[in-house]
Structures are given as structure tokens and as C-alpha cells.
Image 1 (cartoon, rainbow, N blue to C red):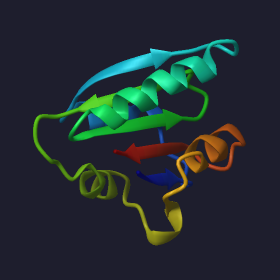
Image 2: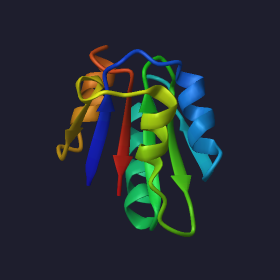
Image 3: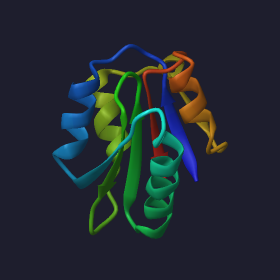
Amino acid sequence: MKSIIITKWIEPYKLLETIKEDYTYQDFTFDTISKNIEKKKFLKELESSQYSIGLYMKNVNKYYLFKKDCEFDVWSKLEQVFDFTDSDFIIDTDLEQPFNMVDLGKAEAGIIFA
């Protein structure tokens, strides 16, 4: 798996709505007690779904799973909508990195590609 960690400030719901335009989705809502349980469910579903991406955002107690029945380059669309530059995001293969950076307030969101 790889992830794109967005470090530039963005409006979280604009990000969510932009992705929702092209995917069906489900969310995994959590609280402090259920966070790790829901994360495991979310990652398991993400790994088992072809053409899917995951989203985790700062200050939102949900993991989002987006599915589509064919490949789609969501990142190109997001780059255009948010006018990202190379310094606005990090590409990483460490699955824990997007979660850690968002939780520490060092990133706005993490997009995980299965």
C-alpha cells in the first residue's frame, strides 16, 4: 500500500465532497475506545476491495472507504482542485505514517491506496 499525506491546510469537507463525486463510500465512525477496532476493520476492507482508497482526516472521527468499479486517478483531480505543489504532500509506503502524522497534527489528511 502507499499513501499520500497532505500537509497543506485544506478544507476537510471540500476534500471529502470532491472524492465523493466519483466513488461510493462508507465510513467507520470511532471514539477513543473503538478507534483501533474500527481502524482494523477499515484496513481489512480497504485491502480486500479493488479500486478503492481510504481517507483519514484531522479532527474527524471517521475512516472513509471509497470504492469504484474501475480505476480512477483521484490524485490528479485533487491536485487540480487544491492546486497542490510538491511541498504540500508526502508520498509514503509506511501504512502507519498517514495515521501518525494526522494524529500528531503534522498533516491534514492521509489518502491510502490499496
